[in-house]
Length: 207
Length: 410
Image (cartoon, rainbow over all chains, first blue to last red):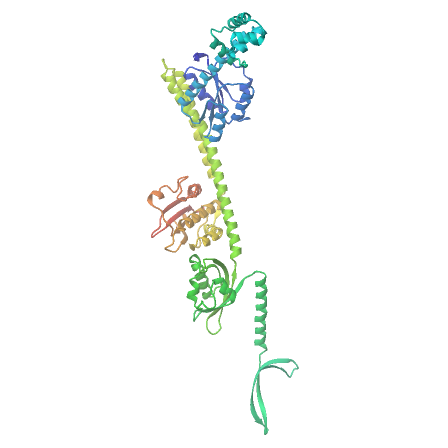
């Protein structure tokens, strides 16, 4: 994992704690960016690297939980670690249900926070890999002809060449040609490989 | 026979008359002795009228019983309503005072005895509110008033009003009020605790985080001393911030400075006893005061000193509530002392064991199931803000003694 590229964002309206978190996170070799408010964070340009967000549950202007929802609605899936001034079970349950990585109560153990940060960054990196892969597959899919896309649907639905030929009203040989073309364009090594790709692209199977 | 005569002034006179046959001037006649009974008739009429008024009162729901106590023979004569109030019938009541007294609620016996004493001494009329526990377990609250009649033998006549319903209403109102006060205290406490926790946790989290960051900077190879130093400096700043928060809180709790004015300590004691009167009566506590006259004034905040006294008295009542084998007595003394004024609040309650005595002034320490452990802690802060001292110690035989020492006004 390329941690030196990763970045940890911190939103906390308490300057003292921001400074402390900055030092702690940098001491384990991670990059940090500090924000005093949610708005500052939204206004900032974020680099496309694995990242996570440390978010105080009590912010000026907006509650951390509301901000979490706001990010989700904007399809911003940055993993969130909540820190809270006091243990509030109801709040922590809500935060975790909405997908938070961790909910820590101040004062927290440094190792707990660092563990949560590593878990969050790993999660974000995986998500980014998946996103990248799907983007790549979409790009390949773009290059298929309508006929090849139709054949693809039937292939991943488990039909034999002969059955596909009957379905689309052509010869088995033509189906074979379409099939080898789409396998090449999608860069699929085998039929199971192609099925996995179709799943990631959410291509519906037909019966 | 009773009849009416026409007197010489032409008015009718009611008389009681008796006659004997005599011979007057040779012929048989009757000698009649007539006594003017207008006075007695008026009295009887008055009684009848009173009886009517009582019946009227009874009809609108006021339950007034009459009683007549022969204080020499120690016997009682009652009206029907009084029988009802005490749960006796005319057949099963001996008329003896001792038998009636058995039905008075144990907590109210002293109240009644005190009232009788006061009436006997002639300083005022008999007046007492007490509970009567009937054999069926029901309780009747009676508001009794009586006067001693110095006629022939020693007698006291009086009335007893059934105030059970009124008392019940008062009590439930009182309970609701007390509950409200308790809840609001607890809610305030809870909010205070939450905000203290938040205020202190912020800098505390920063201290801990800076300290661990510093350790990590030292652990890297080679150690980054500049970063470690900076993190430690930050930790120090945050630690100072935390102690600042605590200092502010302490100041806020003490509400310094108090409104200092010359205060008469005895007056404070009397005010608070009046405030706590109901609780003292309900708790079956007999209160005695030994207040030294001509005490020097102390310089203080009257309301805060009242709070301290009220807290000590309420604690005493609570401490005595489990006591059943001895009288529950509260003794409040004030006296002059080299420094100024000493107030002692002495109870006959469950007392203090040494382990508790050392902790009772700590915040959040309590021996009461519903307590929050702030009363004595705040009281001590108040007394110390007045330049005085508050001490607690076990009583000489039982219970506990709390001593407030306040310096006199310069």
